[in-house]
Image 1 (tube, rainbow, N blue to C red):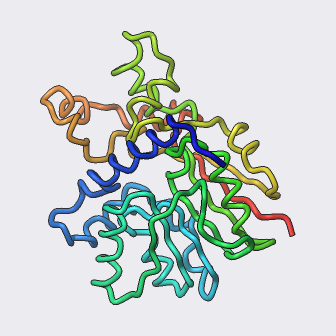
Image 2: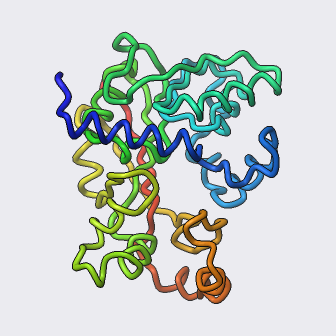
Length: 270
């Protein structure tokens, strides 16, 4: 399928964004302090282990789409999985390879586009992608590719960003309300790499065509609760004050379904 000029340009911008700041790199006290990165990642998002279910993958062929710096990828290797990882960002993969090398693991990591995976159909027992496909211009195509490379009966474990969310509301208050932008457009323009999309639960389930037993649940993100370390653009005295006084207990109590992370499990029909 031929890519439009806008799609090619967006992917270039996404790649440049994550090359410049691989996901979670702000938690590296030193370039090789991967233990600190893992501790912070799983402290902020303790549901990852349950969702990924690394321990169940021993001996299984696993594909992780969007490995970033490799925190989850190395957990697959530790669990005994035959794990392959892809990412659009060579800068991120460089760190993931180093992480595996320092830990004594042989990595199978390659640059690849989630919309056009370089693997035969029916190749993997598990396809895992955590917070990645919503950055692609064609998220639906990413999910079709995940379905294609899964073996019949294999499981997809996909995290997508949800609409609406407290994160979206905060971005709307900061960037959208005075410019006449919608909640979704505020996220699209300002959450991480350019063109970040969000989905309602119903929209996400509808994207899982060809899958059965689709299950989707919502969890708070660190951004919803402002428990993460602010990025470079939010380091002023004003933002430091916002992070300090933000009523996390009230948000947890009243936010309801306004959570950013939508965790989707689904099985490829035999």
